Image 1 (tube, rainbow, N blue to C red):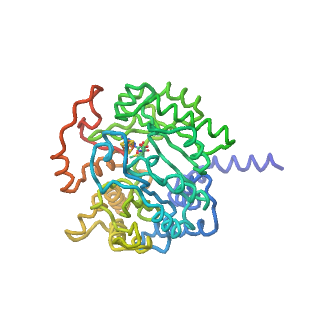
Image 2: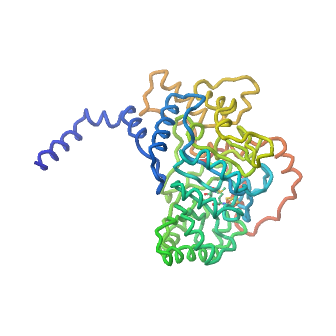
Image 3: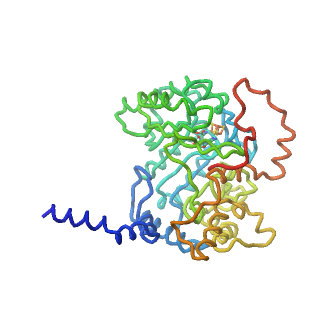
Length: 426
Ligand SMILES: C[S@@+](CC[C@H](N)C(=O)[O-])C[C@H]1O[C@@H](n2cnc3c(N)ncnc32)[C@H](O)[C@@H]1O
Ligand code: SF4
């Protein structure tokens, strides 16, 4: 009985008609629509699932004010950092907003409103989350609500066995450790001020704490951003990662004004896709000062779409829902219908964003009878990172001009040096 059914199935999927179906755009869209995002460990309640489908429907229809809530939240637990990575706004010494820690009270209000809909919370954007005063209770609160949690850290900081146990006991789902090199010289070329020995020792403490507490979580990931100066370290990183019980993930490192795609070593090449920006319909980014950004690529408060009151008495709105459907968010979503607007509206960060420009180009392609399968991407994978990097408000240019020029590093050429025109991923 099973064998004939299997043969029938094999014949069906080998048929050219079936192949046409499974490579068609409607089939792809339907598959993507029903698939749950990889939010490991999230409790998929009926409310979360229905909200996700409603969100996807609104995304597909391009609605500009939404009934659905975000299913992913990025909170900037702190925007303070100890390292000086040259292609990171914080590392480069830019000031997007005042340095501070997100208050626990503000975070809890946010979670109270959005928690029933969220599948995932990320605790970092442009700072170092393990320096945040409230990081452990923040993770614990989200984990208790059945929300998948992720921290990405440089882990080149003071950390002991007690901290490792607290982190494991917090219920954290994924701990990504940014280690861009397997030898100190290559590692510190990007992770300026970082110590590879310290990071590896701290990873060992987390591994041992997991063993002691009998926990499979957090999943430990070695985030290796490949650059021309560190690609040769990948085999050594792979063996060190195995010893530390970490999954090595190699992805392209952002390089300023470069077309670098990460080289042969990357596990996940980053390719832009012509779609409406997923952030604007499904992922909220809330900064330490209550500023709500349109996505994780923007850094300066000037580009925020709204302001939440971090303390009840401070200025700004108290409900996230009032920001999510305000004029600036609605305008950003409207650009994905027609990329038009007044002079003032065109200053919105989303207007010139490569996601918006790419989507407009794709619509033109479709309008002239082109198919999804034969669309040629006109931008480099690095375009988004470079767009955000070069979009600096006037006050940022002023700060940079006043800042003393740092002493030249003894290491190889700084990654922030212009190399060639082009761009990279966000
Ligand atoms: C700005 S960092 C903040 C979190 C934390 N401080 C860290 O470094 O992991 C956010 C993410 O950006 C990544 N990142 C930083 N510089 C990068 C680069 N040049 N290319 C690719 N990813 C980068 C980090 O590894 C991290 O996953
Ligand atoms: S460790 Fe993270 S936040 Fe700090 S400078 Fe580097 S990338 Fe930026």
